[in-house]
Length: 634
Image (cartoon, rainbow, N blue to C red; front, side, top):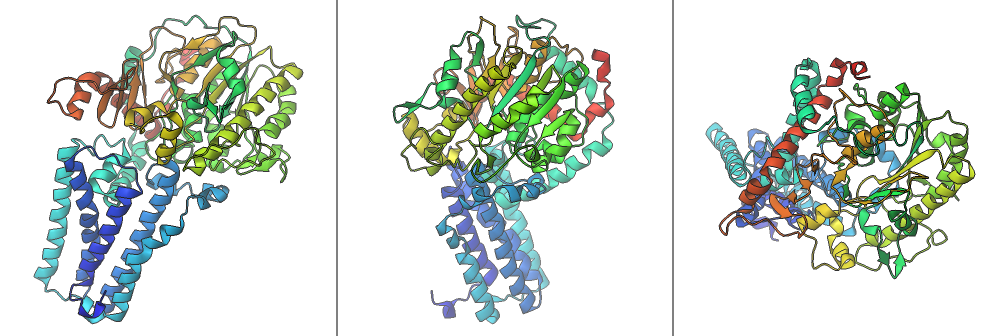
């Protein structure tokens, strides 16, 4: 490039370079689904609209040095924002929110996980910054503009007109985009990454005030909805079957349901869990979904203990750790249970030390309770086999009955495992993440099998109910190509992606002989009422959004945090209503759009899903349970 001949103002050059880079990232590094020409066009223009909005501010600086400095640092800061989102997206297939910035205390524990997300070609992200920096230093006179006030006002007006045009097209493409903003991908796709962050900041400011102005007046409407649509006076066939028994809950890190009864390289991936599927003492829920969002494992914990939905932004464990809850541990404490959590990690990770107190747990056995050394740990900490082995001594001396939760670690991204601990070979695909996943899942399976034997040897097995649940997905959308190879599919469709959110769910009742495979749709929101009813504990007058999984008169659908849902008949995702059995879009008429198809077949449930998510948010943001006296239900 011959920089000497450049006559264009630097803020225009910066707009073009930065906009082009951002569009490239949207198109090739983010897995954004584009369904029509309008979405393609909006995705193309919004990075340039955002770039022009910010870089055109420079024309208001009269001094050359300030104008050039503003452009340099705006390009640098903008690039850092984009890059942080790229790295985050590589792990979570999601975009950063303001609440997650307050979770920075977790970063020190991520270790090698972050470095696996950085690519050599990432250096190309600063090429435009280098050009802008060079031009602002070497050709400031030619690059600077000196507009009269009318010119500066025109630049401002033009940027706002472009922004308004972008928003108008976005609203045409996705009606009520800002009021139904459960899905961040829709926001980024329609208004751009930077406008999304501005919107996120505005939402964050709004929700922070909700607790201050909350007075509990919202509760009657919420309780009325729950009583009419969720709770029931009917009892399940298993009500009280586990009364006075211990509950041992195993949260299996990142284990997805596709590994159950499946093989890799001719070897069973989870032979022990497979054996439980048809065990006469076990109920296996084959259509059970995780419902977590940005809080991942902590969201899983929040769902299972409260039967409330996680937040769409950040993790409840961080943002609302001091709220009042009516969680399962607190309820079981009042029933004479000793409640505890076992997890070989530091107590501040995910703010567990504060949140566990709010949930009512009696004790947290964190990393200080274990002997951790180089030989028995890998990746995120203590391996699962020594974790269970070292935990038994605490269970043996624990007051009974007890409710104890075990959170495993080995099957955590980036799925590291030594050859000595690997009993099956890695998969062979273009994804190192998926390749490494299978040996670590097998290791966790072996650890759980060994734990069952340890419970028997310790005399704890017969008097306990053992629950095994996958906490969230392990393989994100970024590995769809490898997943399609493994599953023998041409590609992973939005419908397939939702099906991959299934996680294993087992309830093992030693001595019980009526276990079977349960096919109804269920999810983590259902755990609290299911376990409490099995223990014979009343949930009358409680407020929750799940169902006892053994009840026949269930509401019949599971809501995902982004507004998607799975029902007995339909799967609603990406604005399309699919037939759950066939995976084909539900047809209404030949001229119907995807949106209208979803509206016609899925709208009744979708309306309930949005209402439930909204009510759950009101409870959390307003800390509404501080206005309730749950003792009246006992």
